[in-house]
Image (cartoon, rainbow over all chains, first blue to last red; front, side, top):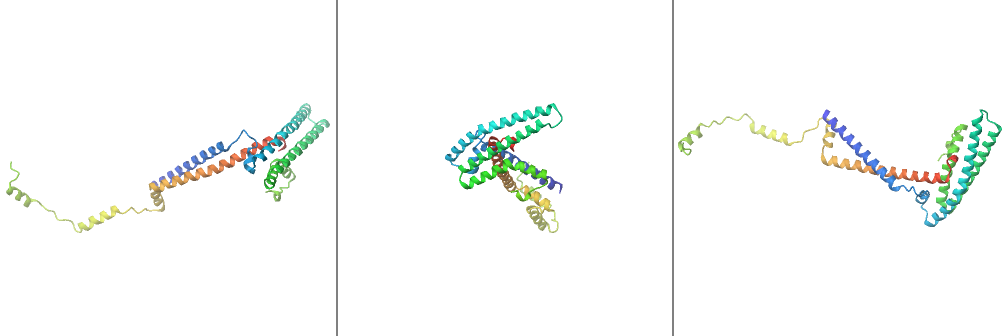
Length: 163
Length: 100
């Protein structure tokens, strides 16, 4: 009985070791093999099965969008710096600080609108079905986090809207 | 000394004692041979399992199956992880972190 138990336990341990070893080796090899860190757009090509022509057009849009996005991001960062310095001098939320918050919100809204405009433009380059899927996924990934936060703050879980 | 003396040889043959066999000797011998040849009966399911595990063919086949299952699951997981990383790369390039 005791010998059988040791055999069974040893076999289970060996099996677990074989499984874990092969699992982690295969996982790392696959991640290493499939990773394309040099190209930010590689995901679009593989996920939405895009042609070279579509990718060229999307790359143009992407490269046109990046400087505009960076410009707005720099403005937001500058305003956040100003807000931080205002908070650093006092303990009250002054009218000036509130004004900075509004300016940051406006800039964020502009940035968000520009981003959504870019997503729309990219989706229109794709065939209809992948385009719809891309747009839905991008909206979910970029706006979904805020929605979840707002829902949790307002107490509305909004489960019926989740996919 | 002469070793081929026929008289001496006859005397030696006659003096050899043949002990009587115990009762049912032959039957007992065959029973013991059959018992030794037959596989030992495992006492419990644990013993049966242990006996099965120790069979080289079964052990090799199971190890190969576990290895293949690990490779398959790892590859699937790796593909998911690579896809997720690529998606994050794209997202990081188009959506500033402050907006997400």
